[in-house]
Length: 236
Image 1 (cartoon, rainbow, N blue to C red):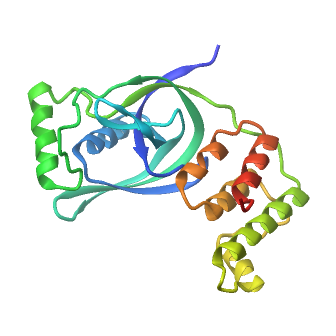
Image 2: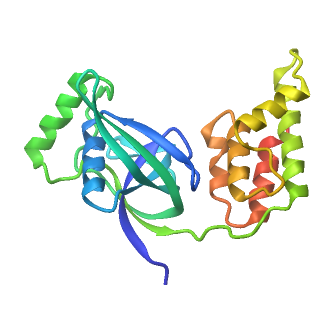
């Protein structure tokens, strides 16, 4: 029987991979509440790519597969009012089994960046009771990590695909091979002992849109992962 647990969910316009660092600036009341609750608990929440096709009580819905983010640092910063700056690190990926909607529906014409929008949400929250959760939660089950290795030959093939894609996308400009090698060095991707983290990083370099990375996060075997990365890096 797979263990499920209930965690806060933060839908974002990005895909977080295991062991990847993710700094976040938190200014919305509902996500300040999420961070406060995490700091009182185990410091973990779920990061999911936004599901454009659906909503939860009017808010952005999350995709079903996401990654646990562990808060490693949290500080208050005064910029146009109080913000939280947090640093997080990706842990396991998970699958959402059941969404627990936030108690506050998204108001009409809500602007998440405006002071008025924040006040509106805070007032609604005070009316229904400040112990109520303003953010999405979900019952999730953890997905086992891929523990297979990638061969150097497979890795070099993926790197070549990435280089071809970048060269083709740059046309009519010419990209020199040494400049591509320099990019790989900058991202610490020159290696004779590639790991799964190298594949995640190369994928992120080769994607134009976070939706292209979701199938890679959802892969459960090394063969499937390599196939999805090849699809991402192959010029259509």
